[in-house]
Picture (cartoon, rainbow, N blue to C red):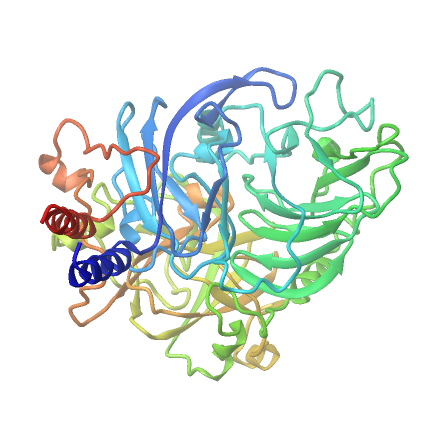
Length: 589
């Protein structure tokens, strides 16, 4: 080959490498179905993914493209939502009723989204019809890219732990009870990774219940990612004789502090570093206990797993590690206030998290959102936010916006409680693109409520007991309030958040407590770029149509078939073919 041709081949190789370089794809093929399990000893149907309960962990890296083909083998419609994944400018993939038509029974649908500029610990779950009460959840781990430093040493292992309240009633029975105004009451137990409690007390735990064993090596440090995926119960997590070093929550690195226990509220996720620095004379209890309850029936609401050193000499024994005062919400609030953003650490990008100085940004919109316990509206038990119980339309909001269908929703959600009777409505928050919104959640219920915002991480800047007033802003943390997607609001108290509305789309703001959410405690936020924003994801080719657009739907949504091999975009594939042809032409001269 002439030198000039050889040089051309080198150029082609370099160009092809650049053309084919890009963010990797990760492919998953999931079947969602019922299986029979016995978490608390009695057989019941649970929702599994690929036969697993809990489902598989989705383990990816910052900026990867995730493709999940979901086959619905349940007997009712299904959507999966990705708690804490921001879906930058792509709310089509959010998997809630306001953005997607449900996947009918027997159908499949393929989600495709990028975990753009995110790291951390999250989870997915079914978002319709109380289904999360039957399972269907699993973990999401987004690892740092190798070029971004992690603000702690590489742990020796990475372990995902799900804690949840659990009922032996099916999710269908539970939602019927909620519709009738029947309180859920004490759960039948607390699960850890889908399993019941170790028999720490023969009088409380019956024999024959399978429990979780976590095997570790002495002297090593593990990262524990703990998620409360339950229905409505705040849980206290602790490990006998071991400290929990908090390092991350829902995509934000935190100031590293030691805790002996942590209150984890519904929908929240935390990462702890735990060093196996105790002697191996016996196993150790891992405990998740219900919080802020006052009924003797709740004594059984304790989940217990086992931490087992590889050289352990015997079983765990003795009393469980102490729980903070069961009714002390002040302890829990002070603990929550102690969680701070690590402003000097990078996260998905190399610049420090604290380089975004949220405390110096002018607030453009303020919403004081007040909840109330269930009440009768038009003869039905419902929950409300600012006096409105969300009424989901048959046509998802995102589709109605895409096709300019009038009358599906209104952009008139009130920024404060109105002096009028509670009502049903499909009323959205009209957010200003690139605005900076302050939201105050005021909890008039008698239980802790968690609130989650899709599409964003917000800054938790304040919380206190009593009624929020303008003077409450004087207590805000405007420097290192942690950025996360789910926050707790204590009964008779308020929590304030700040959020930068830089992610265009229609996004769900909801109560994570299933009973509150199911009865209407949610609202959507419309954040639309007034300019023609070509960077927002277009209508997916495999969109399922329903409601007023049902006539557009064929017999089956498009199935995206794939192998486990990395995928190339069509443009990159065409470039590769052209380059290969050029190389062949040169070689045969």
